[in-house]
Length: 355
Image (cartoon, rainbow, N blue to C red):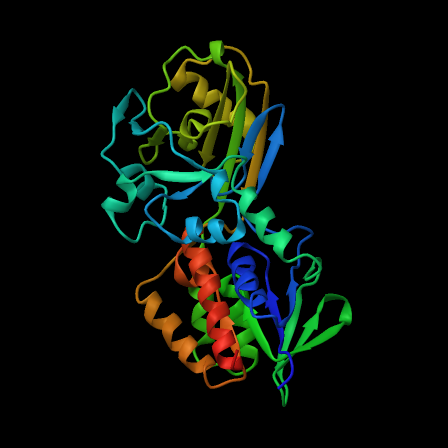
């Protein structure tokens, strides 16, 4: 039997993890990404010595998936531990201590192991979460194709035919769909997978963050812990992470980096965030700069019986030519969950291909 031709659709963390798993087998691999860059919502920017995260800033230290993958990629020495601990609740008048893990739960962070996992804290990478993306992309050189979205999927005698943006097409013996649940659901429904429409019921909550840089002497109130969460209905700022306190190397000496999570709002997001943070933290003067990220589809929110619906769809996929699904829309929203989902999808596809 010849070398299997495999396509991974989507180059977010789950897609990259699946592709890395498949690449180890020596198959003929192509990774198709509709955007101009890899990583999905995992975005790290660097500016004036600051490390700015547009998506997740770390992962639960108790979860093994990312340390294991980092070791295999040769970047385990880039892992850093959380420095500050503890969080607060802003009730509109004062900041009060929150019990361990409560802030994570309020922000929708996936912690399937419960309080013990959260109590172990978080880890990240020395230069931000893009370190992991860059390492995966480096191992997939020549196999990634950008601005190549999937518009249709059809079975063939040997596998699948993928219709791509621009009118081109590609054939593959096996496919990993590492797409948001609503997008994968439409494609699977079109090829007659019963229950695929249910994947579209996964709701993705919008996410708006603003990173703001300050000189340390602008902030009059001590920055205790990792940040705060606002009580429901209190202001536009839902939460604030003291990014330069949480992980090392996020800001130059004598400077502070804050990251505000906002309710969707009109107007200049940097101005809105700064106005509320100035009142809460006693900030004098304007920020050195502000950088906003707005994801119209951020963290997935699962409806009741979600796992059962996903399992049923996967069982039906087992009756078709080799095809698997991976990503936050199915198996958990945390970065570790996405790595686990992607690698498991890659292994399942290899098993079905006889690899």
